[in-house]
Length: 128
Length: 511
Image: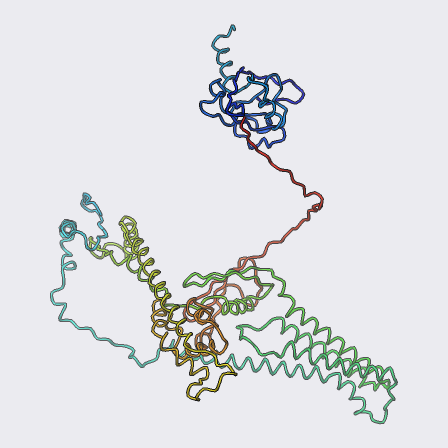
């Protein structure tokens, strides 16, 4: 998941659609994010490359909408509803996720196990 | 526990048997080999069997009686006499030589100035202004020289060193040569030729005094300044209990370094207490006490050296195999001792604090009490001492310090504390922790004779790795010296504006 500056980022991503849950006045998604270009990347426990300033999922409420939708802890969020999440500040990411007018967020997330699964399947079916 | 091994015939059996083990095993081993032995040495049987009439023979002690002196004793006595007399003699001789030299040096310029007037009173010249000025300067320089020499050389000697002080000898020789050469020139050029110019003579005297002042400067540099810069780090260890200190010394000869170490010893090392060493000695004795060596083969088989060596090796092997529980005893004994000391200490502190509350310093404004009530410090100390005496004595016995403090010294210290308004804690400080040797009574440290034991000559300088010993009556100090390494220091400049900081954020938001 590391990137070469100047080159487009390539990653194996998974589409996840989360329905926001209404709790009183707020719409919640049921997970916590960490990271951002204004944060310290060295303290991120989930990133492989300690200079990766992307947005990561740090906590998931059990039984919440995110868990139901298939989001896992340690996932890196690449896009939210079409908005890029790889080069945003922490606050911008939070804003993109908590828009009051949207009921649904469509995320593109990537994780290490996805790449391995693809590699594994490629390996077992070399013709594909 | 030794497992019984199979014995071959002719095996040398030398086993270490533990006292207190099952007796049956011991008997087994002995019996079998004695049979072998008897079979082997039948013609020499009489040696191994006990002599039946050993009780009949008597021994007579002949030779020197208790009061006779052997040759060695006589030599030793004369050497002692020589040493004690020789040392005093040498001190007086040194001092008298120094005084004679000093007087010679002091009166030489005066003699230079005065002799023309005495020898040729008719040929007197007038002394002009410049000449008078020079005479005054001679006088003052001589006075300064006198004070300086008195300050540097005529101080009370603090120690008697085994060998002479090389630098002093050098300087004395230099001064002697110098003054002699001046006298030579004076007698040849001035007295012989009867030089009429008095100014020349005065200038000659002035040059002599100047040169003497410079020699004094050389003396200050060689004797005092040279050893001030630290050059060697010496490590001093007391051989009996391992107390170690480190000091920095300059370039000194070994005997002067030893003197510096002894002076530091008196104020830094806690007092040597032989009573504290008895515990480890008894433990060491117990290690070997449980083992007895039986030479089962019988005497006369090997050379005695071989027996001793194999005996000690067997003992070491047995000691290693034995399940030793002495470490357990040591641990519990030390814990128990610690507890006892702390309990006694608590009782002592309470007793002393209570005793100190019984007396109060009398204020001047108070109405005068009856003369029977007013006490001086010694009486006050004697009044409150009995209430704390028992607790103090018990504490000193437990920490094995009772021989360091006498009743008289304790009462004196108490009077001293009362006079100077010291608190009970300050009074107790000297008894709770063992202090340096100088703190105790004069009989503990006055008049100590030290012996310097060194492989290198004691007037040679300290070197890296030189080792010498300082032996006192009951203990020994081992001194090793190491050179202080050459320090290469470099500088690094920090711009004051370069101190800048950023926050390291790591926030987590739940959405």
